[in-house]
Every structure is written in C-alpha cells, then in structure tokens.
Amino acid sequence: MNTAGQTGAQTGRLSVLAAAWVVARRDFVAILFSRSFFFFLLGPLFPVIVAVLAGSVGSHVDQMAAQPAVGIVMTSADADAVVQARDSLSERLGTGLPGVVVLKRLEPGEVYDPAQAFAGRQANIAAILSGTPQAPVLTGPKGQIEGWSGGIAMIAAQAVAGPLAPWPDVALRTTATSNANDRAGRLRTAQTAQMLLFLLTMMLAGMVLSNLVEEKGNKIIEVLAAAIPMEAVFLGKLFAMLAVSLVGIAVWGGIGITLYLAAGSAVPHLPVPAVGWPLLIALGVIYFAMAYLLLGSVFLSIGSMATTVREVQTLSMPVTMLQLMIFFLASYAMTQPGTGIELFSVFFPFSSPFAMLARAAQDPALWPHAAAVLGQGVCVLLLVRVGAGIFRKRVMKSGQAGAKRKSHRARVQRHAPDVSGVAAQNV
Image (cartoon, rainbow, N blue to C red):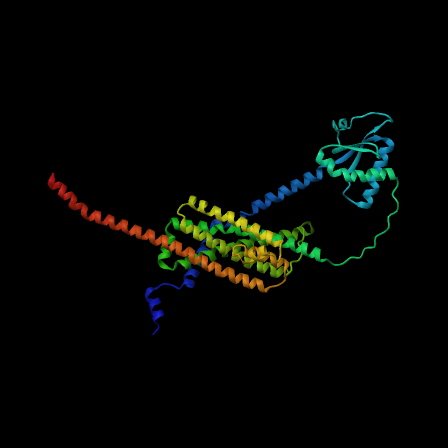
C-alpha cells in the first residue's frame, strides 16, 4: 500500500520542491512582464552615464590645466645653466623632474625679492628658484618645495658641473613576464571581480525583502503559507528573484560587452586570471548566486519579523553595515594569501563567495571551489529553514490571535439581543 501517496493525494499538498517551483514561476513571470522591470533595467545605466560624463569633464580639466613649474629668478648665465641642466637630465631620466621657467633675469648685483614673482604671473608657477646654482634658494608652499628639493638639488649640481658626461648604454634583455608582474596583475583582476560581485549583490538582494513585505501587507503570503510549506515559499521567492537578477545582469552584461568592443583600446585591459576568463566568469555567476541566496535568506528572515516599511529599514540597516564589513574583510584577506585571516574569510559563509572569487583570479586550483559552493549551499538551506520557522511562528501566532478575537466578537453578538431584551423589560 502506498500510504504516503494516498496521504498526499488526500491532503492535496505539493511537495516542498514542487511548491517552490510554483512560487518561483509565479513570481518570475509576474516581475519579468511588469512595467517596473523595464525601469529596473534602466536604473543602473544612469549612474554609469553620470560617471562617464564626470570622467570626461575631469579629463578635459586635467588636460587644460598646465603642470606646475618652478620659476627661475637668477642672472642670465645662471638661469641658462639651470635650464640647460634640467633639459639634459630630463632627456636621460625621463619624467620626475619639475619644469622650469625663467621669470626674471637679474643684473649683476641686483637685489630682488622672490616673493614678488608670484604677483601677477601668467604661468602656473608653484615655487621660485633664486640665488645661484652653488647656493640655490627655493621659495614656495612647504609641501611643494619639500617634494621638489631633491630634483632641484640635482639640477643645480648639474648646472655647476657643466655638460653631462657620456653615459654607458644599458643592454636590455626582455622576458614575457615575471612573478611580480603576474601577482600584481592577478591581484588587480581579483579586486575588480570582487568589487563587481559586491555591487551586484548589494544592489539586487533588496528585491527579495521588498517583495516579501509587499505580499505580507496584502495578505498574499498568508494564503500561500496556508496552502504550501513555508520553506517552499521562501525557496521559491529566493530563486525567482535570483532568476530576475540574472536576467538583468545578462542585459547589462550584453550592453557592457558592446560598449567594450566599441571602445577598443581606450578601455584598460585586465590581466588574465589564474583559472582563465571563461572559468572565472562561470565561477562569478555561481558565487553571485550563492551570495545572493545567502543575503536574500537573511532579508527574508528580516521580512518575517517586520510589519512596516520603517521596521524593514531599521532591521536591514545593521545587515547592510555588516555586509560592508564582510566585504572589507574579504578585500583585506585577498592580499594575505595563506594566512589565518584568508582562511577565515574562505570558511565564513557570508564572506566566502567574495574570498573564493578573488582566489580564483590568483590560484588555478579548482577543488576548493567545489567544497566552498557545497558549504554555502548548506548554509542557505539552514537560513531558509530558520527564516521559515520564524515566519511560520509569527503567522500562526497572529492567526491564533485573530481567531480568538473573532470568537470573542461572535459571543458578544450572540448575547447582545438578550441584553437588549432585558434592558427593554427593565424600562
């Protein structure tokens, strides 16, 4: 006898997975084909447009602003010697030396206050070099002249020494790369991937909370809780919102790839990660899903305890702050491979997706990722059960209280005619 099947047929309740699939399909279709989803897709484009415009304006301002230079106030012979020494050193040393501009050529024995050269100047002069090459005097703001003192001393010494002696040619032997370059490049790739994962998670995980509070306010969630297991409701909502987020990421990713290909060499290229780009992208999708489910399950638990939007904001703020701290922990652990702090960030469920994605960019080993994803999945199931238990307890408590109130009102109504009749007889 199939007692379980007969019991399921008699009760008419779906299994947890089947009920979760029904809830997920309902929420996914309802959100995907709503008008608000279109504006949801447009939302992140506005900050990107503002950032691009701000960057272009800033670069234009930088190009228009001349580099600060050192103004020379010396006799003609000394000024020419300083300018020639600076040009000679700059040709061989490259950048790093301050630019020099002759502001005033003094006559022999002429006394001149260098501070006067700042008044009414047209050039971008940050300091004044006076005196002689043998005893130079640099006048200007403290921070500026302290940073330039070494370069000015080199220029003055070369002006005293005269023309540069020939320097030997250095033979160059190039290699494809080095360990230091590989580590620095992969660290930059890991930091970029980690930052992108954090921004997407924080931007999209809040949809779970808003959807739950909305349905809790119009009593839909209570109808679902009475028909199917609460764990199925939570799982269905989590995976529906995850699917909606993945659709949004796919749209944004397509736009980003199009812009990247159109920009060409204007966009800086990130070094190839240790596991390669295809596998890093696949791991990025997996770790986004796990980070989303972990944070979304916490938000569902918060939604089960909140009844108003104000309570939601009050309860979710500590979670958001803790998530920032977790991101900083994972970012710091990324620079300390093999240490205790890095191992803690890997095993701690909420920081594990960020730490493991950064590790994928720096370490080619793949087996730790399977173990990490398995542990994160177990943590998601535990959080869903805890959140569902909290919600079930609160819903059942409110339902029992509501039943008691209804029973009390019914008893009052039954006795009300008798009371009115007695009152009429007394009158």
